[in-house]
Length: 162
Length: 162
Image (cartoon, rainbow over all chains, first blue to last red):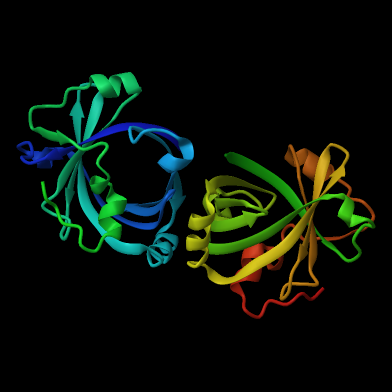
């Protein structure tokens, strides 16, 4: 359940064709705290409480953080969801194989739409830095705090602007 | 940060003499969910988010559960504390050496006072079952749901009755 995540994130303007061929998760999430991140998430019919050590606390870059995903049931998810700060984030996540890696393509529902983000998790910082995305990847926004889901949830005026 | 806890709990009617010689933690805690348990706690000047798998979920007895203690700072603690269900629980916890083990003696503040509980954590279920407490230990209430801190927090009419 503990997972040291090393990941990068990109803006996407044109999604690949035949998206429906890939595994898709319908995600809803709500934030209870942003530093550290305490979040509840529904992924299809599974429910989690997630804790991510804040950057200030663990001293790492945005590339890497420690994450815990702890199981909830539907009742405890719905109970904790009501305690959220800001709004719910809803998105469809397509899982697209890419060599040994997986591209997670997040297509956001309104009001965050038309934002689309791609995230890739890597086995090492070296692999993360060496990675070249497919040609439909746009700008690398790994270090841009505007594209953290917590920022989208907490800012009532959040609007996608390139 | 993951910890499989095996513990027993007793009622205490007479505390040992010279309690002030032992290490003491001043604890305040608040519950956001009870099944599974999601709790925030202040221990002196340290702050934690705690998750305990519910009995229904992990299929274990009250003797044993998996617990995660994840660090918060003061601001995130105070933010999450406001999202609590029911009331704050405040107590002083004395740590009393007992052979290779430690007795945690919890002396509750009002309105839970005059309740005093002792808890001991064990390295194995065998050790837990074989343990004989000192003669000032009262009734074993390990399996009694009334003496779970979450029950005291969530029931506005909770009152200590032997």
